[in-house]
Amino acid sequence: MSGEDIFVGIVALLGALALAWRLFGALRTGEVALYRNRISRNEAGPAKFNALIGLNALALVALLAIAADLLLGLGLRG
Image (tube, rainbow, N blue to C red; front, side, top):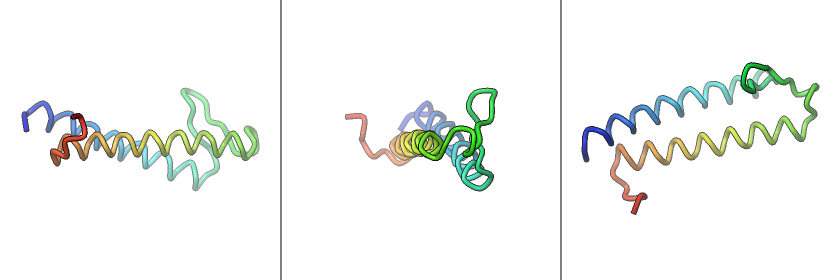
């Protein structure tokens, strides 16, 4: 494992933690941050709000997979 892999893995892990904080905050408050705007569940409708939450959850899983691969050497990159 090289130093770059460890650094990028830590950055990906920190990004995943920030995204998880944002995701759970959105579920708690009913508002999701979208660029510079905040969209509420009532404003967007339940389907669009849940789609935004789902996309954020997919990004969270991707960041966690990247961090795990780089920090634990899982060999997912081939």
